[in-house]
Image (cartoon, rainbow, N blue to C red; front, side):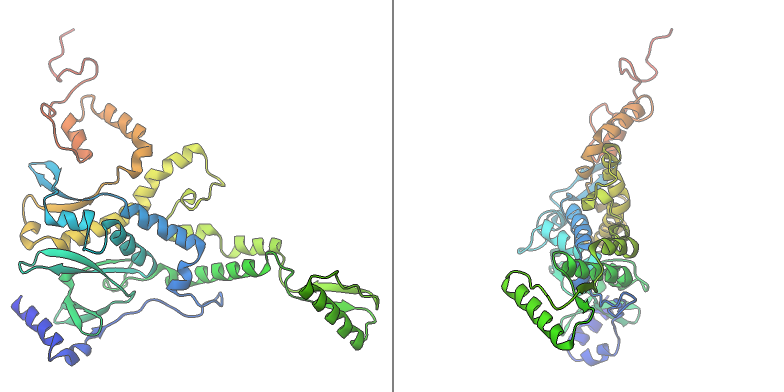
Length: 394
């Protein structure tokens, strides 16, 4: 441990140049022209309406969930509001940011840039006191003798244990990949289609006039007359010099709809972020039955991977080493019950069935992260709800 701190201190003071030789800044952004012909960057991709909707929905839904510190003793789970980590992850990670805004930004950054990074500020006892968001999509990583350090700004070098790093898929396990630039082809098509729609809808589009037997001089008169009419809002210019016709160069909006369905539909972007269509306000094929089930699908397949990622990173970096090896450790956990309110009927029916000689009241309460109750460890049976084994003989 002392050797590690000496290396960090040396890097900050006299040995910064030697550390610069070990800078590892892997870039998987692919900010280049692709088959669509459009330059795709994180900023441009984030402005695509479907991308914004997906990222905004997932980020806000995770940020609004209660994030708790749980203490488990003798199979009894209880939220510990007195633990100092609870305040950081549940209420205020630092004096300038609420927990909602912090997690909103962290998840947003990870979903767009591929990396959400926060600095853990510690006191003299090495206990976390603040969590501060770090800007930048491609962190500079320093590899030294098997240890990882993060270079923040021009000179601050921090060991990886003092960094919360939430990342998308990573080729090397260190730097996450941006889903926007990794899917540059799809995003480029969407950017091109949006540009086309903005240019065509409500306009005549570009084209040219053709005529039979029109001299060059007469053609100039026709062109000047049309330009003057359009510019000044006058009565449309009428050409008496001969038969003329307008030739459209841009595709019509109907043809553009064909391109939209063939090259880039919203479902492609929704698939990248695993977001159910109704969450992007697409109710074309939605029914009451399938819409009511999408909350549980959304939690299982969209939110749970990110929730698990955040919980594991916080458990690893925020608690002490002694806690990690304790038989009754503290750990963090999001409470997703709020999102599953629409599925309460199904859960109630399940618990009612399982309570008939299978699960005890306290076992069910444990599944809901609730504390046990007195006399709740007895298996009950349906009917008068008397303890199993005490029913009268027939």
